[in-house]
Image (cartoon, rainbow, N blue to C red; front, side, top):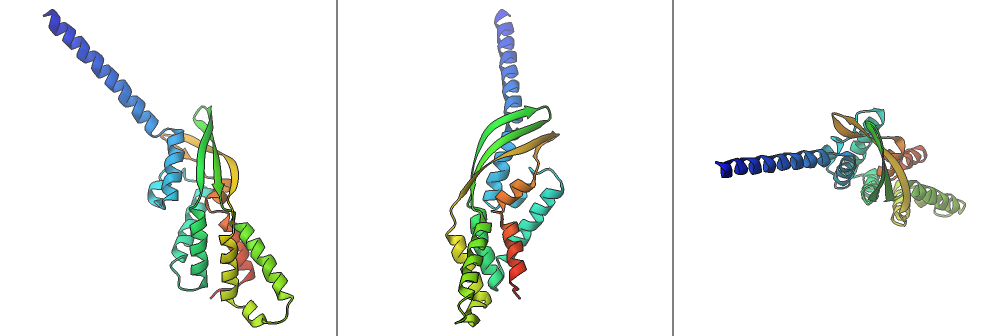
Length: 208
C-alpha cells in the first residue's frame, strides 16, 4: 500500500515536471526572438508564405509583400528588366543577420538585429555616374543609349557591390501570438534598398 502511494506520488511529480517543460517549450517556440528568426530565415530561403505569417498586418507589411511579389514575378521576364531583376534578387536574399540585445516593455519587445546586406542604390549611383561620363564622348552614342547597354552597366555595378552593415531595432508585439512589426527601415534592408533603386531606374530609362 505504501509502495503504491509512493509510486503515485512519483508519477504525479513526473507528470508535473513534464507539463512544466511542455509549457516552457511551447512558450519558447514562438517567443519574440524565435519569431524574428523564423521570419528572416524563411524569407531568406524564399519561403514567403511561411515567412509572412509572422508579420503583423500594417501598411508597411502590405507594401513590402506587394513589392516582393512584383520583383519575384519580374525575374521571369524575357526582356531586359527580367535580367536586371534576376541580378537584384540574387543580392536581396544574400544577407546575414545576428540577433542581439532584447528590451522587453510589457506586450511590446524590441530586439536589436545586426544585418549585413547589399545596398543596391549604390549600384545605380555608380552606373549613372559612368553613363554620364561616357555620354560626354559623342562617339558610339547609339550603343550608349540602348536598353541592353544600360542594363548590362547596371548589372556590372551590382556585381561589384560589397555588403553594408547596419544595426536595427525590430519591434515584436504580443497579440495572441508574437508578431513582427514591419517598418520602412526593415523593408529597405530586406529589399537591399531596391525599392529606391528600381524607382530611380524607372525615372531614367524606359523598358518596353
